[in-house]
Amino acid sequence: MTDPAQLDAKGKQAFENKKFEDAAEYFRQAAEGYSLGRAGLLSAEMRNNMSVALLQAGKSKEALEAALETDLVFAGANDLKRQAMALGNQAAALEGLNRYNEAIEKYERSADLFGQANEGDLRAMVMKSAAALKLKTGKITDSAFKMMGSIDVKDNPTFFERIMKFLLRFIK
Image 1 (cartoon, rainbow, N blue to C red):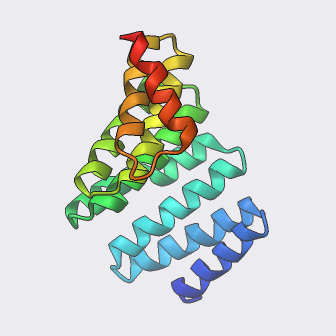
Image 2 (cartoon, rainbow, N blue to C red; image 1 turned 90 degrees about the horizontal axis):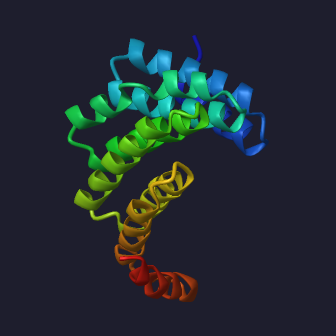
């Protein structure tokens, strides 16, 4: 059996070369190898890498299956940042499956965890994703509040984001 770390490296290389399905397979094998070695956190991380690669390959259903419950592994290790990332991966896959309400819920949980982990820029990115989905589903006022919140948590908002923040205040 190949070393899971080597499979991880091959997966990352395949991902960089935009061979997403190959990357997903390497990450799957690495996750399996880490599971056998009782390295649960590494296995969950490989499953999340696999999820991202599958999503890039246009396989949202498989991406969701790969990422499901990895957030629980990270929660058990009290790793808020990776737990939030796992939820974000699940949300992106749900969005790809047009399951918008579930995606919004996962994005919001992810944003809360990123906030607890003091990861302002990651929190802002996830909040923007939730706001875009709310806008897409017709929840315009809620979307505006989410967008304002995503700008508020950024350490260094861009000029455009500062203008957006100013304009969004008129929606209240």
